[in-house]
Image 1 (cartoon, rainbow, N blue to C red):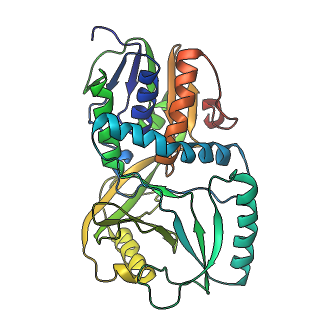
Image 2: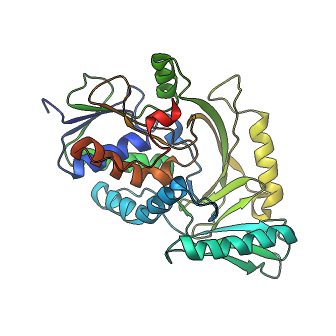
Image 3: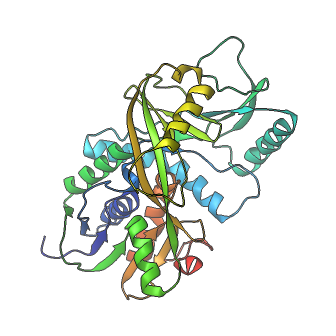
Length: 347
């Protein structure tokens, strides 16, 4: 390929997804990342695609809902073209309801979901099952929240499938090279730091996360949210648990006692995990834009350059919709970016 209509810097989920959307619209695409596919936060292990609570509705929540509803078709196409399984499945999520006030909030949110989720999914209050189900989260005061919108994806496999689908249709994924055509910067925490230096304003920060992978086969079970932890069963016989949110840290990719605490809390919250061995520990830096929403739009300093960053904890859930709006902006000049997601909102 001598030239490219789109050059994407960053082979994480935002960069690869936007590259895919642009390629699907006929653009020639080149992705450049010296560290390889999913080398940063997108190489994590949790992969929870969980909705915001259906209340105090805003543009961020509406955007995320659209993206979560797009995810099934998005990842199904990637699987078909790549021949690889991105690990997507929508099995819902269970959360314990601890007391009376929490039950009242959950019931109110169920009404909110009926009004806001357009009949595409439910947020239900259900009785906790009788008996000692080891997958039932501890702390349920007789009731659980069961939402049918939550899904999961295997982050590393999803990015590998995206990269494979791109190259199958003629894209290049390279460790280095010169940019040609329009340029997208999807470079995660390092990109936020660079943008902050270039503009003289804090665009965002790197938040460290730590997560653990248990050897336990609960494929097909709903994911859990208990004691502030996402507990996500994957199809490969593992369960991922995470994560911490660390603003200060000595090592960006080292695990420590904070992860030990996550593991202990997970074993306490979910009986099925108490004797399950931990087979992997992960730590990495996630990009959190100053506005807390994804940062999307034209680069403030470079003509013909664009930014897709700030996925933080919801990058995989937001990726299908981010890809769509960024492709429309870059290729058609149509700006569908919600208020508060614009690059200027984080500068």
